[in-house]
Image (cartoon, rainbow, N blue to C red; front, side):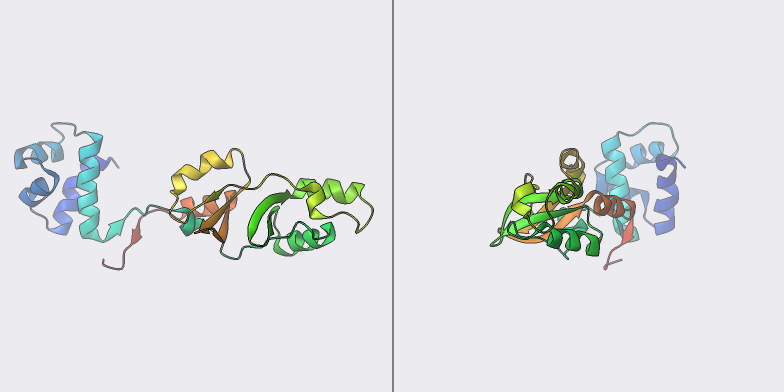
Length: 192
C-alpha cells in the first residue's frame, strides 16, 4: 500500500485532528488535507516528518541500529603465541570462520579459517604458532557506530571488533549484520 494514502487512515485511527498533525509538521491544515486526498505530492522529507509523528503516537519507532546492538558479546580470541592446534580447536568449537588475535589486551592481528587450513596442511604437527600466519587486524569501532555504515567495511574485512575506551566488548560478523537488519523492522518502545 502507498505510504501517502496510509497517512489519513493512520491519523484517524489514532484520533489525531488534522490541525494537530499540521502544526506538528509545520504545514497548514489545507496542505495536509490536500496531501491526504492525493491532490498534491508531498516531499520525502515531509512524509518522513508525518510518519515520525504518527509512529510516535503509535508507540512504534524504527530503531537506529548500532554496532553495539549487533555485536556478539561472547568474544573469543587467540594469542599470537598459541599453537595453531589451539586456534583450530577454538574455531571448531565455536563454529567461527575467523578469530581476532589479541596479546595483553591489544589487537595484533587476525586469523582466518583459510590461513589456518593452509598452515595446518603445510606445517609439521603442533610446531606452528598463530604469529606465523598472522593476518591484518580487523577494524575497531565504538558501540555507537551506525550499523548502516558497516557494509562498506565488510567489503574489505570479514569481521569488525567493537570496543569502548580501548577495551574489546564484542565482534560483529556479516551474519550478525544480516540478523540485525532482518529484525530491524518496527518494534514497540517501552513507552508505547
